[in-house]
Picture 1 (cartoon, rainbow, N blue to C red):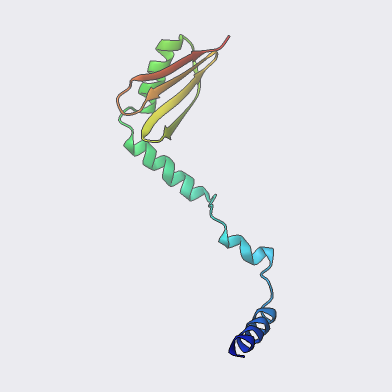
Picture 2 (cartoon, rainbow, N blue to C red):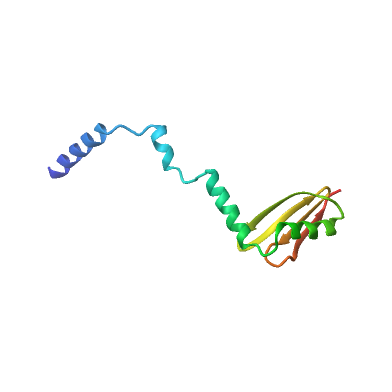
Length: 107
């Protein structure tokens, strides 16, 4: 008898509360695309790098014999590196010690 009474009370409570709308559910999502968070992550990566971007660009320019078109400081697991693109060349340089991780030439 008590179980039936609890079931009825629970169903009344559930039916009294409407389902949340999509707008009210939006803050519950698990990602954050705020610009300040991206900037903080970039600053943190730059502070960890021992090799500065100008040094990495110079290394890539000597390897590829071309002008550097773009670069990006990124990480993969525990590895922090610069990914530098020249006209027909892509070089990955370790940002901690300046070692060349990979060099790819496209034709």
